Length: 92
Image 1: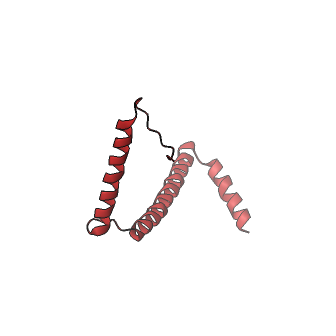
Image 2: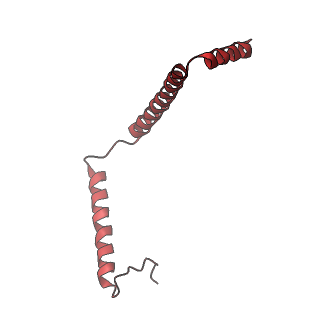
Image 3: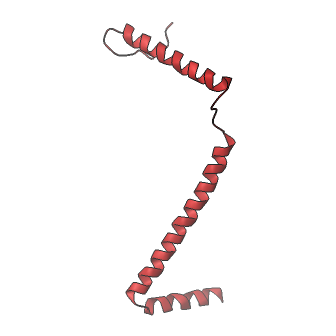
């Protein structure tokens, strides 16, 4: 029953003019993209809400300090190399 009705609709669509078929295809494509974007944005904001940004407090200051110390260590190893390349292998 459902398959027969679908096949009849497809046959009716084939008999329509080209611009009507194109308009139907465009509206289906736009609806599909809008649905996918809506689903993605819901999942994205749910995931974003799980991990709030640390704007103040000790955690953000610790992260800033760790970044600064890592940068200082990198710059020191870069400055100590004679050829300008940094040796990333662990030293013994």
